[in-house]
Image (cartoon, rainbow, N blue to C red; front, top):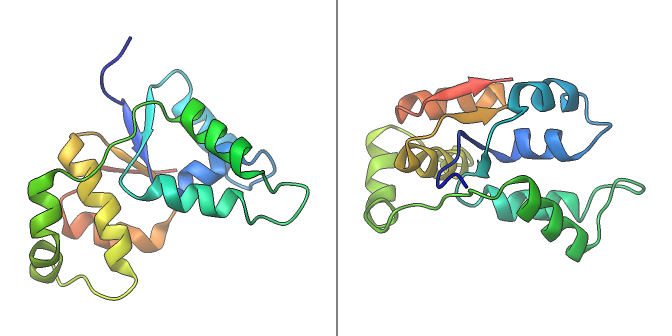
Length: 138
């Protein structure tokens, strides 16, 4: 059994993978086929939040959302203790502020893990690049 993820996903890619009628579902599914996946940082909580608040019929119950995340992303990663302690300084040094901070935290978790971060979020690319995150836009 693999001990690390081939790719980690941010919320944009995770939701696209799990929601079959999402416009990017097919592209993310094809890109990730056969790979061992994880979620980066708090993307697991964000993905859970999205899946449990989608409009019906796509909305999942809390237990179904938790199961979907656990099953699809068995190798999720968190910030290292060091990165968690220094994140604000790292983000400030990179000029990252406002809502982009949350993308930055996801990016830092992926960077800590040494795994490429899969995203569908063009808006977050600048944040990920500023932090030196290996990123794959799908």
